[in-house]
Amino acid sequence: MTRTDDSHLPSSTARLRAEVLTAEEVQSTAESGRIGENQGQGEAVEPEALSVGRIGGLRPRRRPGDGGEVPGADVDLVDALAAPARRTVAAWLLDKRSPATRQARLQVLASFLRWLRTVEPELEPLAVTGAHLDAYCEAALAGALTIGVRNPGKPLARATVARKRAVLSSFYTFAWRSGVVRHDRTPVSRPAPARDARTLTREDRRLLRLGIARLAAEGRPAEAAAVALLDATGAPATALAGLTLQDLRAVTAGEPAIVTVHDGRGDLVAFPVPPPARPLLRTLSAMRTAGEPLIRRADGRPVDVPWLRAALTAAALAGGIPRRRAELLDPHMMRATTVTELLRDQAT
Image (cartoon, rainbow, N blue to C red):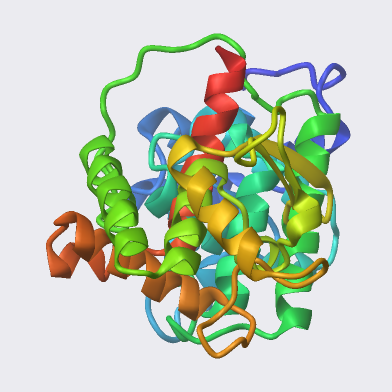
């Protein structure tokens, strides 16, 4: 049998090697087509070739009553990741001895990865930023998750979302400490990804901005300004709802040129106001007093995610986007896409 020196490997990787199936189990699994011929003959199994389903407590469940401990689809999702991400996930799962903790970690991470594929299908998991976690948690709170959850479209409790974020933060902290987090600063040529129907193409954005102008012309400045700022800044709905006169800055006399918003973590971030939104904010400013929300409903009530979703759909329809597509557009998807584009612009 080939021997491999484990002295240079992280302790979690060494444990992974120690927790793999016995030789008899490997032979049995090989006969069922789960492992390659060489592994079935007893040769050493490299960590990057291992399935996370062979970690204690994570046996995949393929059919009722087969003794599986976690959904086989979750195991397959992680196993299909690129080698650096797959190894990192395996090491992170092994970092906890409790099978229940490992199972909870796998379930949360798999749900997040499925959501990520709908938002940024070309993005590697190790290139995720805090903005993606913010968008995911906001979507969960608003009931905008349609994949990776037990009841699609149903808002999750704040305590549940907080637990999910803690698990995901644990993974990315582990990955960062392991030196595998990838925030590329060099632009890479990639084939055009297949876009999710709920995200905006370049042409969609052009039509949406046309729709913003038409909403403004119809006397709906609050909706027009909200969608314009969402398009330009990727600000969360709570930040847009909390904008006041004090958040606007004019570089020179006249229309506001800078807006400050709080991101999903509560940090204050400044953005240039897109030219189409400047007259809208000036109009709203003239209608508000200091400390009063700039963007609110016609009856004075605060705006929220459903209101912003309706405003986004209205702007899309006004710009000429077909109704079926316009009704699929979602503030959370748009926010995640916008933030990702801003990060790429900074990198280049």
